[in-house]
Amino acid sequence: MTSQPAKKLLILPGDGIGPEVMQEVRHIIAWLEAKRGLSFAITEDLVGGASLAQYGEPIRDDVIEQARAADAVLFGSVGDPRWNHVGFEKRPELAILKLRQELALFANLRPAKVFDALVDASTLKPDVVRGLDIMIVRETVGGIYFGNPRGIETLADGSKRGINTEVYTTSEIERVARVAFDLARKRSNRVCSVEKCNVMESGLLWKEVVTDLHAREYADVELTHMLADNCAMQLVRNPRQFDVLVTGNLFGDLLSDLASMLTGSLGMLPSATLGAADSAGKCPALYEPIHGSAPDIAGQGIANPIAQILSFAMLLRYSFDYQAEAQLIEEAVAAVLANGLRTADIMSEGKTRVSTSEMGAAIVNELDKAQA
Ligand code: NAD
Image (cartoon, rainbow, N blue to C red; front, side):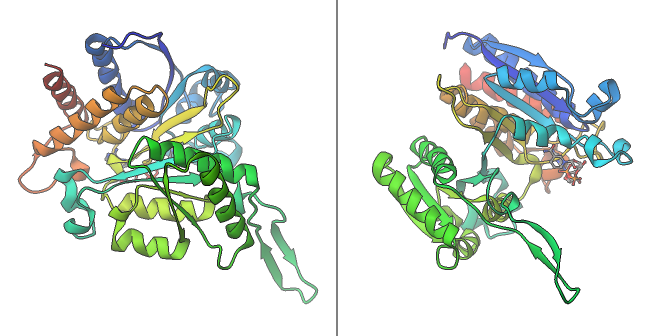
């Protein structure tokens, strides 16, 4: 049993399947409070289309303030086709963009883990992905998506030129590399830093800064370097060689999507976005499944709640340092899958199809068994 002050948790279920899958997390929270003695001070609010309907805006300043005050934010997903007609400044999706911006969340963490029971769901051969467990750390507020100069200009001959600029500073590289090294220490203690130092000065600086930081503060962690194009190839050829990968915004965007598809299913994948720690060591953090609000299946009780539940397990592990409880949840998910239970998105022949709430209940049941 753990007995610590209540952790402040802000829950933002959002739209579509968000509230349905979040309901299953609430059951797990109730279980942790009842059976593990954990205590959560929970606030909940509306974001996305749900907030637009109630308040006329996708996220209120008050919700941003609640997110700042919380120890961690658990986000569902936003997006509702009923708001397709509104301008970009009122889209439901602005809720998540604004949260990331306001909390200065600069490091996106995407695990790609293959559960034994789902090894056949990958498009790669089972032998290549069995046991896969990697973490991609992507820098999200710098690099070519934000660098200046940028724009489209008209040249003297009337033709046009599109410009974007890849820019990284020492401190931007150091802070995201620190996240990667700290994560590696909680995993298999290996970091691979990815850039294109052979053709880009920003990549050269990236490599130098990561190497210096490693020598100064993280010599106990194994560090390797890889060119981004080779990394894309290696992720498909032999993904298990990696533990933690750290890279910039553009390469991370591509490589994290590639890595997540190694596991075969959108409904299974959690993510986290972290900001810089303040002087008291508190680090803003938001956890969410990588899938969206899935309006095509919303309200039918068939969504897979596992990505949302695993996002909560990440939150327990990385924001609250409840390692044992995070592991219990991950093992309960693995056990339910091993028992052959499947929501529609991961259904295959010979398995038992279950609803969202049946999947959630089965995971709680496995937690009970593990605790007995
Ligand atoms: P999506 O991830 O919502 O859905 C893609 C497909 O995967 C759909 O067929 C859906 O039914 C299925 N799917 C997704 N999650 C599932 C789950 N848990 N269980 C079973 N099946 C699942 O992507 P989309 O259709 O491109 O986008 C829908 C809306 O979500 C859009 O408004 C988009 O902007 C928004 N979106 C939001 C976020 C976010 O909140 N961070 C992320 C991505 C998309």
